[in-house]
Amino acid sequence: MSGLEHGRTVALLRDGCADDWRSYTHHPFVDGLRDGTLPRAAFLHYLIQDYVFLVHFSRAWSLGVVKAETLEEMKVCAGSVNGFVNHEMALHIETCAAEGIDEVTLFNAVEEFENIAYTRYVMDAGLQGDFLDLLASLAPCCFGYAEIGTRLGVEAAPDTPYRAWIDTYNGSEYQTAMTRLGQMIDGAMTRRLGPAPETSPRWSQLQKRFTTATQLEAAFWGMGLRKA
Ligand SMILES: Cc1ncc(CN)c(N)n1
Image 1: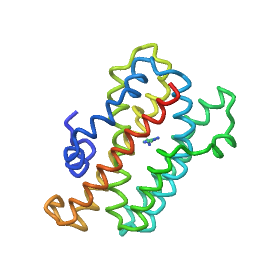
Image 2: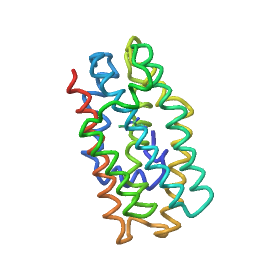
Image 3: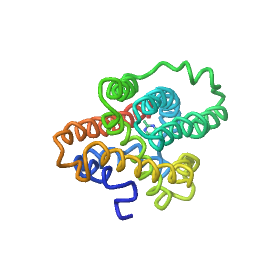
Image 4: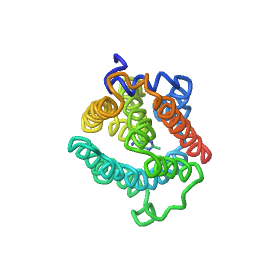
């Protein structure tokens, strides 16, 4: 991987919080998915919380349609909402159904504090800020899982019980959507801040949002491990 497959902006933001990014993408929870040692109870606790996460995360992405300035921006945001609610969540619904947990139970699950903190943080970034604030806070979720999926697709133990999870994020549907999203983000930055957005006075605020969301991702894994 060149590090630029998700565009220049994401590469810069990721490099701007390299330690936090590594804590997120190489979290012990991720190691457990890779080698299959993650306790099932921890995985299911995470997955139920993640279903609710995706509900609220999709609401935040919907704000992108409202704040977009071009049709391509609208299409990518609308596509993200569609991808989460109609495709990614199928993993959660099917995995939980096999464990006897139905969708009504998933939808009504009591949110853990880490879940509330993360989803309402991104929602607030979008309500209070502009399109770029929203994208900077949404990006770690999307690209971190793309990176993890790619890596675990190569490194995972052949008999890990978490293959369906890995395949979802390593799959071409998710990966292609992330490539298009990275291109859209580069275009949105250039359109609003010029060809070198990292030199803009706005950049430090955008980096802060990206870093906070990255830290909230690591905390989300930690929440899952509480049931280990
Ligand atoms: C917490 C979290 N972060 C990211 C993803 C990937 N969309 C997710 N499902 N959940």
